[in-house]
Length: 128
Image (cartoon, rainbow, N blue to C red):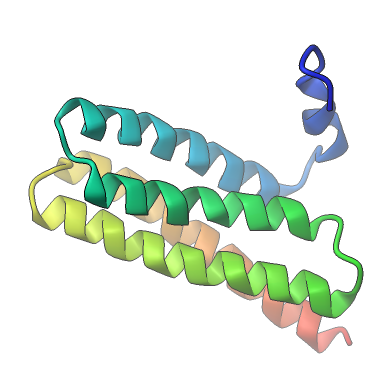
């Protein structure tokens, strides 16, 4: 993709709920990561950033899977990353780095993504 045409991705992935939700979730996590770094929290925020953005990266990559098994494998990676992300969010909340409101919004988003991924994996496996 050329730097001057970022809208091409949006057009190519139009109307794909899991792509949209995981990408929007990643944007929220990037914002939180910046806030946490401003407050000198670097370890947990980096772990959260890695796991949370990996969800969307693997979902995005799955869109060009070479086979049904490849697609399921990428979605399973995303599912595992969503599980890890829930852990880091809970830890950040329990250690008072994020507010209850921040936690609730992000945790709910992550749980929704987790449910969608689980559903996609189950339905893809049952279709084979």
